[in-house]
Length: 226
Image (cartoon, rainbow, N blue to C red; front, side, top):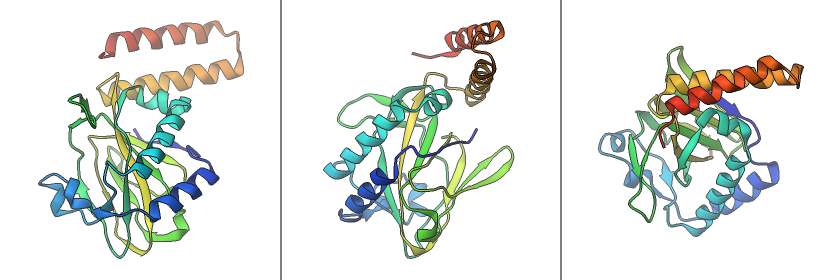
């Protein structure tokens, strides 16, 4: 399930974030890659300890908390603080699947990566290449969104970032442990939630919407892991 969240960050927030990020000391992205990923990863990343990156990450987390769409699709239980990457000069990240388990910074809390999210911070016409390519049941999905937009997709997906041959591609990325571990079950809940909202838009007093909402919450109660 791939879900596009438009304008997670506003234009001014994106411009300021981009200006700050470009001034930071970037490091080789392979320093944070696992053994397999290090062979296909050539991008740059900011240290998780970078104070400026942490502030922008907090902004993204605040915006996620205000996004009904993210809440509906991810059903978040735990969200890792965002990391930031930079692609330029032909750098890329080849086919890989994200690690299953991460550790929350400055703690021993483990986080299962059910859902991956990328927030685009460079306008699509500011760089050549750099598409996020996600392999799902319908084949390859190529994603290159407006600055401030986000894409949410299963962390279990095979995916890659194509080489950036001109310009600079900046982005934020992070993982979410969902209340519902199964991607298939999350997909059904998301579809059901969309149906409820559509019925309510057409008839705010709809008895059918109330019944559908009850089914939604009973399924969530049955499938959630807390």
